[in-house]
Amino acid sequence: MTIIKNNKYLHMKRVVITGLGALTPIGNSVDELWQSAINGKSGMSRITKFDPTLFKTTFAAELKDFTPEKYLVRNEIKRSDRFTQYALYSAAEAINNSGLELESLSPFDIGVIWASGQGGMQTFENEVMNYTQEGKQPRFNPFFVPKMLVNMASGMIAMKFGLMGINYTAVSACASSNSAIMDAFNYIRLNKAKVMITGGSEAPITEASIGGFNAMKALSTRNSNPQLASRPFDVDRDGFVMGEGAGALVLEEYEHAKKRGAKIYAEVVGAAMTDDAYHISTTHPEGIGAIKAMELAMEEAKLNPDEVNYLNAHATSTAVGDLSEMKAVEKAFNNNFNNLKISATKSMTGHLIGAAGAIEAILSIKAIENNIVPPTINTVEIDSKIPKTMPIVIKDAVESQVKVAMSNTFGFGGHNATVIFKGI
Image (cartoon, rainbow, N blue to C red; front, side):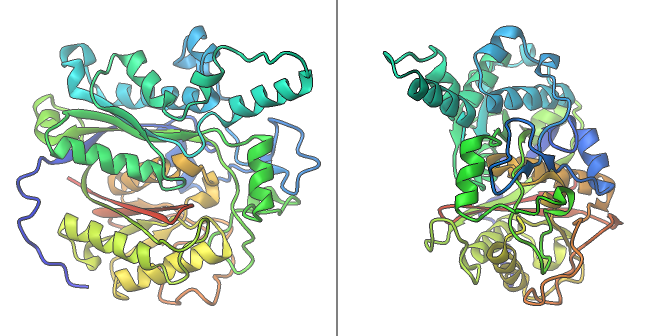
C-alpha cells in the first residue's frame, strides 16, 4: 500500500499523551505493569471471586492485592460497581502522573471519554439473583441502577476531579477503549477540548460472564495449567482468558502540554474504525475490515507500513481471530515487515474486554519510551496457517528501536479499531 501524503489533516491540533494509569492482573500501576510485561509474567490463576468448580473454565486473570482505598473514599466504593472503582483508580494515577494542576484550568476544557464493554455486570447479577431468591415483594438496592450503568465510570471520574467538559462512554465490545481514545483524540484536535481523560475498565469475572462466554466456547478450558492458557498464535490455542482491570490515558493538546512543561510520552498520530458487517462474534476470516482500519490509520498518520516498528496485536488466542488478524496485517503492510515486530500482551494480562485497548495502548507507548518490545508468552509452535513471514516476538522481550507503535482491537459486532502512537 502506498500512502498519499496530503494536507487533509494539517489544520488540526496535535494531540499528545501526558499521563498514564493502569490497574491490571500483572500490576497495579503503570510501572508494575511494564516490568511484569517485559519479564513475561502471567496473570492467570484459579478464580477466587466465586466458586468456579462447576464451570468449564475455572481460572481467569484477576487483580492481585487491589485496595481501592488508595484512591477512593468510602462512599465512592459503596456507590460504585467494581468496573467504576477500577476506572477511578487508574484515572487518579494517570492524572497524578500527568502533573496537571486541575484547579488552574477551566473545568470545561477537560473532558472524559471512557470505555467499557459490560459495565456493572456484577451489580446486575447480584441484584437479580437476590430478587429471584427472595420470592417476595421486589426489593432492590437504591444504587442498583447507577452502579450498573455503563456510563457511570465516566460520570464518576468527572465528579471526583471536577471535570465539566465532554463526557460519555464508548461501547464497542472489545474495541471500546480504542474507540474512546480515537474520540478523545478527535475532540482535542478539533479544538473542542484541551485535555481528555480516556481509557477503559472492565470487571467481567462473574458467574454470568464466565458462564456466558463458556457457552460460546470462547474461553480457554486449560484448567490444569492456567498460566499457560493464553497462547496467541500457538497451534494449540483454545480460547482467551478473561481479565479484569483498567487503563487510563491523559490526552492533551500539544501546545498546551508544551507550555506547562509536561512530560510527553508520545503523540497520537492516527486512528480509524471500520466494521466487518459479517458476524455477531467472529471476525471476518480474511480480515477485510481490519485491513481497512489499519490502512486508514496509517493514511491519517501519513505513514508508510515500513515506518511502523511495533504492532500490539489484538490476538486473543482464539483459532479464528488470531489467524484473520495476521492475514489482515500481511495485506495492510503489503508483506513489508523489515522494520516491524509484533507481540500479543494478552498472553500475560488476559483479555480485559472493553479495557483491553487502553492497557495495550499503554504498553505500546511504553515500548516507544523504552525501545523494548514486550513478548508473547506461552507460544511454543506458531500455527502453520499464520503467514511464516510474521515477525512475532515470542518468549522474551527484545530491545528494538520503536518510533511508531500500532495497537489493534476488534470486538463482537464486527468492530475494528486501530490507533497509532509516535515518539516525539
